[in-house]
Amino acid sequence: MKKVVAIVGPTAVGKSALGLELAEKFNAEIISGDSMQVYKKLDIGTAKDSKEELAKVPHHLVNILDVTEEYSVKQFQDQASQCIDELYSRNILPILVGGTGFYLNSLVEGMNFGGESKSSKDQRNQLNLILEEQGISALKDILREEDPEAYDQLDIQNPRRIIRAIEVKRITGKSILDQEEHKNDYEFLIIGLTDDRQELYESINSRVDKMMNMGLLSEAEYVYKNKKSIPQAKNGIGYKEFFPYFDKTSSLENCVEEVKKNSRRFAKRQFTYFRNQMEEIIWFNVRENPDFKEEIEEKIREFLGENHG
View (cartoon, rainbow, N blue to C red):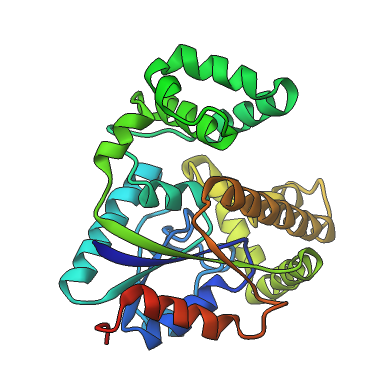
């Protein structure tokens, strides 16, 4: 099995900084698991590492697409797999860093998407709403109708598992039982970073202010002026919120507050996703545990075994 370390968690919690530190200590290179950092010219709003940091440790799946191109979970899965295999051919540890939960989970679970995939966001939201409003029995009915074989073999008392099974069936057209046959040969150590909510929100607000000082408004204006030819990036947090300012229908101050608010909401959604959909994560609270870096390094050493350089 090819061993891969992944660092996940909400935005602004410190994933990138930790990834850089670990890469230097463990003869590793970084694979970005972020759906926006693939785009060239979008550096500030996507919170890419600096040019110096990118030069210090090799990064993969960063700045690989023009903003006019679309990017799918299947593309990520294929390209990330290629990166992992290539790094292993050079005896380099892959460290996967990012916050796009479904992308990362597709790689961890080895899901088979067949042809072009489509977003699962609406599907998942709908199914979670059904769970909340109608209960698990309604989800069981859906699974029994759409994938009776999975209904018979899965733990149908687990709502997370039911939602995953329905989601996979609708996205791929294949049963989640078939996905197990397409498991990759990777073994993951998944490190999750978290923080006290208020502290995290303050970090997010502070990072947005820093982005503004770095020139986020100019980057957002570029997206605004080219939004007709930019299919995905125009919807990114940190860009779309400024459109009313350029349309002269809102103040700059209000738009900045919208970026902060949407970033905080995004962080909450990320944390919820990772908690509910990726049970194998080992969590570390960066605020409450001053020794979290040393403990993470020890976990990695245990994971890699004594023979790793």
